[in-house]
Image 1 (cartoon, helix red, strand yellow):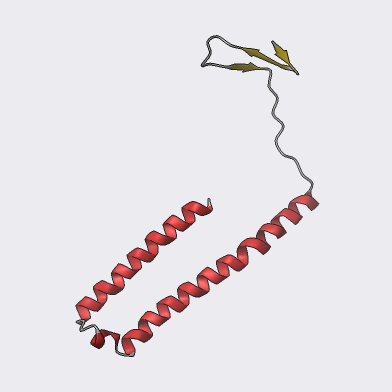
Image 2: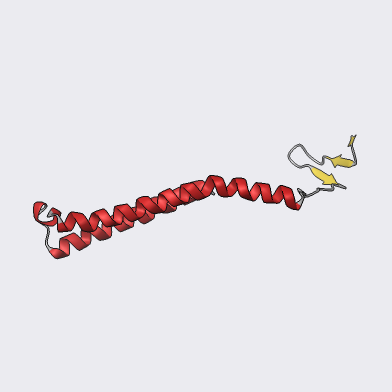
Length: 104
């Protein structure tokens, strides 16, 4: 059995050998690459900016909540507040890792 410039040899039903295969990598001009990078930038940069902004607001709100009396309302000692803040950091790190895994 022969196909266009590729010979296929089957030794058994589970193996497949291919010979004489030429794979051409994608090729584009500098102008096409510039357009592609621009599209990627316009898509990802606003998303990254928004995530950074929300992360900053979230960290700011935790500090403001302590000043506003959250520690007293929840009857937390300084040590308990630090543990709660640390646990929040672990959760945020874990969710960022999972989110970044889905992006790639």
